[in-house]
Length: 317
Ligand SMILES: [Fe+2]
Image 1 (tube, rainbow, N blue to C red):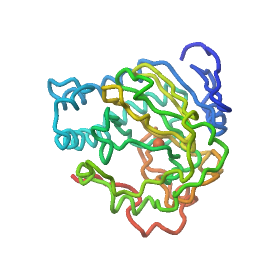
Image 2: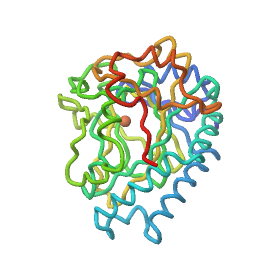
Image 3: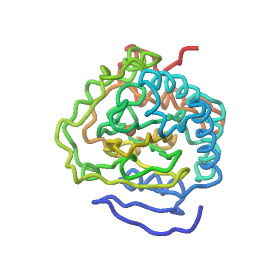
């Protein structure tokens, strides 16, 4: 994994570069708001290359980062509407994540991961809704993530300060007024997922919790890693997509993990301001054998809203 290069700070947040902590020590730091940044490894590069090949095949002869300038936006949305689920549910995507988790010291039998998401951030407000939603500041814990969720984020092509993601670290450990009470994961699965997402071009009718207080413009911290580099952060961090005006579409992938021991003990980031309901835990799969999170562990995170809709999303065949 390389030598430990050092630490930097973002506000009160410590950033570790190529840290050599074991997984448990790393999780403890992540729950305190630390961010971990890693250079590419053979395993992350293999996943990056796999994603890049799927993207390039989907766009035919067009440069994916520039394709938005040669396509009608409805066609672009349709292309992503086909590409993203194929990537997300591809068996090789799961296998790549398993290899990455092993490389990064996670105990496969005690770690669960969610299928990876492929993200696009188009430039110049070309497409910022639906299938290519431009994420406003949010915590994943406003979207039914458990307090121990860890996000793993990786760019597929070179990113720039103008098309990466931003951390709003002033809000780590501080509540911010928000409307997360509008979000229930099972209702989300029932009403807001699936092919209809590609129809949202100019507006987005989905319940998407956001801050109801201003996030200061200078509370914006950006980390640039090369393609195949990784940024690990707690799902409780306030983060967003940078408004992209670079002239290039950003392609990235991310996935989330939870550790069984932390689920059982309720260990994780403090929940200061989340009022959403439901849990995403039924989406997670064992890094060992792809089995689901045991019912007794999921049960610890149920809140009586389970009859609102499906506990996990089944993509249409
Ligand atoms: Fe997020």
